[in-house]
Length: 444
Image (cartoon, rainbow, N blue to C red; front, side, top):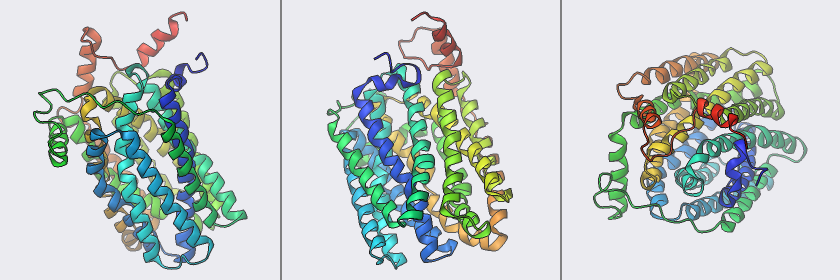
């Protein structure tokens, strides 16, 4: 298919087209949820503490399910695991929609219970997605596949979803945004059903696993053991743990509060800020999809992530909605640029048979302190102020992120990739900036 070339190359593959299409629709619904949930909570309860509680209820079961989700995705068809996850989350959103539309969503505990089920189901989706992509996309198209992933996530989560949410809330009320999210999960389920069964991952080599498939707990231990052997894996996971602790809770709890309460903005204003961030992420995804990733990709990953985290301080400094939007562009654009390179690096260097488990450890360790981040956001803001909390989150988070780059062994993958580039090892190579330019010079 001549249409699917360059950054669109992975769409030549039917399996990936279906996965990408279903996920695109679902992410639009999730983008509506980001606005609707915050607006519903502040409308009903009016205080950051309530939003903190919702964040804890959403993230805690998700973190708890991640390791099990990774093992399940390696043992079974990850497509089927994703299907069940989407189905459960769709049912939860349908329930929230009914309660909101009928005016019976009046108890915080009722909402907390529903989002806990949602979070538990979500814990199985991320590792399964990470395990599925390299099974349905050839190695030479992985950079583009990850760029498309990072294109559609901000497009759905931060552009089309929030824009639709702002319009729907203004015209029909917040309950219909939950209903729309439920419908997008149904569409995603239909796309997953249309995909063919995915072949099992090849068995781990003896140096990776002596006794594969003995039990779920044995598989889990092997995944953790593999991560412990590689500084670039566990170091990056820990970097995300502490960075997310510092900025995710303050951002998701306090940014809507700043816009709604301090600036007197509407749901549309919050939508516009999130949409700006989505545009930044899409621009980054398009650029990386075209030119590939740098040869010093670990340095690039940490550099982009550190600057992205530093830009969170802009949420604490901004006094106009447009200023918050500019900060959001930088945060999301650079985060996406680093994440594309990180996903490609992980898929390139981690054996396919271990990828689901390694990804689940990544998700688990990276998000392990998110419940604490949500729980601390409101009391810290009450103690030192909302603006100072956001400012400190950006400054401290950036310092922590960049500091992890200097762990001994963190840049070993760069050295291995350089060796592969100099020698014929039989391993598919990472496509870097230079190789992208070489490909552009070759006549079609």
